[in-house]
Image 1 (tube, one colour):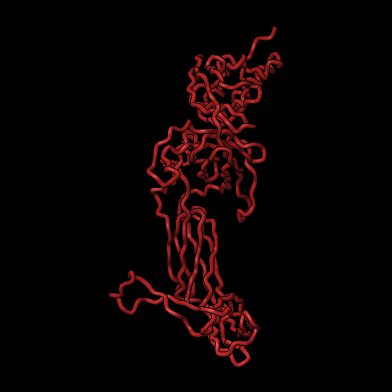
Image 2: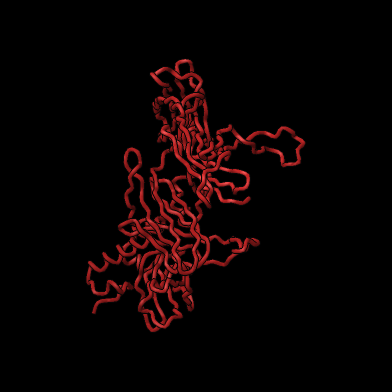
Length: 459
């Protein structure tokens, strides 16, 4: 009779193939735990069996047939006897055991510590109603990083936030939430945490060679919180140069243009060490940090007499802005690598001459339809000005005053024309003593616009 392997789903295999599949299964479970995976990878099958442990417990549920058992996000098939379960051949170390009823969106999630050749008892686990965290993990590819590619087999960690405000805006309270949740993306890059207890989570993804991703998700019972990730290539930290020339209409050099380059901060583990990202992610300790070695923020310069500029800036993903009075500003998104000199020339366009048009129409009595003579029709314009009297009773700062006067008075037939109104959307008011004021919206073009008013008696 074949000897039990400790992996019930492999019991039908036999001989040497069984041993090979046992080791492969172990390594698959450990793929998201690289340190322990590397430690066991060099052991013989016999040594592997001696270095693993067992998890035992009981589920407080009517039936276990529809439950899914997950160890660090990887599905396992325990030995079931009634409501009791046994999971064998568990690698040593810290794990998260999840038992989920996907149909009911309920689950139990507990941390488990395993020692070699020992059994961890988790007691009786009761499933609680929860919500779901789900999303897609992909990476940006292509020369402009404008397309995405799904990332399969990537570990996703959801770490509960223990400090959360009361729903009514009351004081912050400390919650007793379970250990971090762990799962792995499928072949389409999709992942989900089902039966996640209600609360706020920090969801993180770390992939070698890519920037780490962190999103925040708030889970409510019976609902799904979405946290998608599009990871970009991790650019080696260093210094590069962005240089070029700024020209205006006709190719003339633009002197004194303000050139500003903005850097983008990156998620790093606490030690700002790319080599430790995987370990930091396993512990759920990613945070927003800046490298201590290089300053980040904005870097500025002015173009010289030839319209040229040059800036030494940190490598990474950059945003370049160019501004000068009288011309339209320009923006470019850049990827700068360590030691690279990137030439970025910009041709600024002139400010287009604003279009103007007229507004014309008729003002009538809303009740009788008769034309109203002497009604004032005006474009509503306000601008911000500083208060004339600093000691005025209103709060310090600014006040609102009427702007330029674009208005007209209706003739004996109730008709009006307002000329020279700048193109664009406007609000126009019509009023006459003994009638309620009416305000309408209109879009003015160089061909003009028509706007009729029907005023209601009263006011």
